[in-house]
Length: 203
Image (cartoon, rainbow, N blue to C red; front, side, top):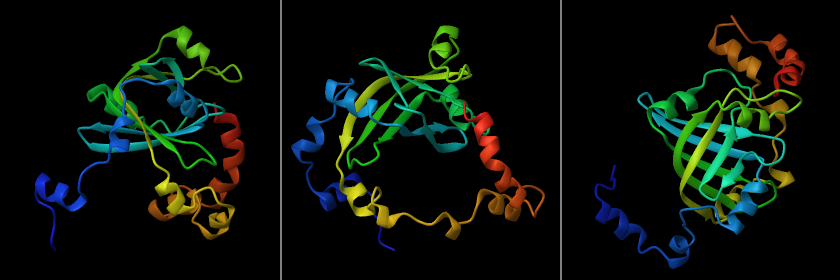
């Protein structure tokens, strides 16, 4: 197998970076970038820790992230499975990366920065839904912001109805759990209980 072994080889293979790919990168949330963040109900949160890397999906009703200032973002840690992999990583390595998706749009937005975990009562209360506040809020001090061109979304046809898969053709969480646990957990009963379980624990 032939692999790239140096930066010179890599740069020779891909050639120079065009100006449009660099001028779009800034160290704060501009007005245009703020509009993209406000339109995004979903973000992938990437973190790093001693055990390795983690990438966690985060979604919310409306904007998934709040812009506190042009240099600070706030992401509520909504209910989940309590693995808290992202939070464990942030405590030991504050570097994070965010990738925002906007339904129907080919443009994505990337934010890199340093994160901390806040349990400020007023901040938590400001994110409450149906009277339920998150247990913590991830604060991201922005270092780099830039949009990503639409090629990946266009190639994948992500938002096109024709590319949607029928869930019946895919393994369910209950089936996966049952297989991996040798039927100790999961199964059809797990899947059947999911809608009600999600309704009670969404926020």
